[in-house]
Amino acid sequence: MPHVFPPAAITALPVKGSSDTFPVRRVYCVGRNYADHAIEMGHDPNKEPPFFFQKNPDNLVTSGEFPYPARSTDVHHEIELVVCLSKGGENIAVEDALSHVYGYAVGLDMTRRDLQAEAKKLGRPWEIGKAFEHSAPVSAIVPAAEIGHPSQGAIWLKVNGEIRQSGDLNQTIWKTAEAISYLSGLFALAPGDVIMTGTPAGVGAVQRGDRLEGHIDGVGDLVVTVA
Ligand code: MN
Image (cartoon, rainbow, N blue to C red):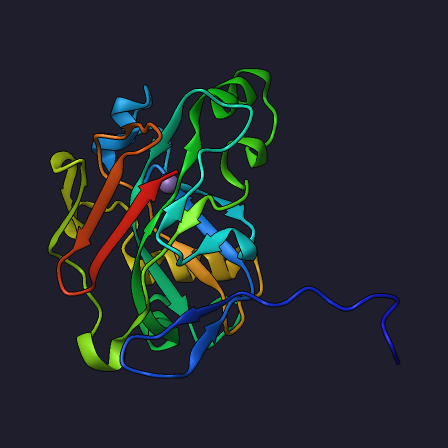
């Protein structure tokens, strides 16, 4: 049956060392998965466990450019490990969860902090703060078949050459397998689902012209310019 108009193109992420791409289905994000970031945002990680929110698949961009978004004067960087699934399921056991992972990437959960803060205050959803155009710059995906499943190692972000965020993957409250398992109890996961796993402390505002350089040991680098 013909569509009433041509369907939107799917988002497909590059895979390092391959001409094949990774077709994205959904984007889930973990909130407050590093205790030191929860604390800097004014929360007690011992009282409030991490949680999930979503971005849109077409918010993922690999152009290396982040256009400063409209309606905000306080846009923050959040450097994150991105987990890309090639197998889905519901109620996935923690012990099986990593076998659902195709690979990993370095990502930025760009956030309109002023709009998010207003949404929090009013008890409203977070989309206007989180799920806007170009809000998720990512690197190429590195297959787990090549690098394994990183559970420790440095994760950092420099702005104009200066370290702003610095942590270790081993500081996450929910480990990757736990996040997948937990998420699969709430939603039916499927190949192409992507999980952004939270950010360490040091989030802060970006300005037009800034050069953001992110790194995760064993996964790679991501360089993004704010336009
Ligand atoms: Mn985040």
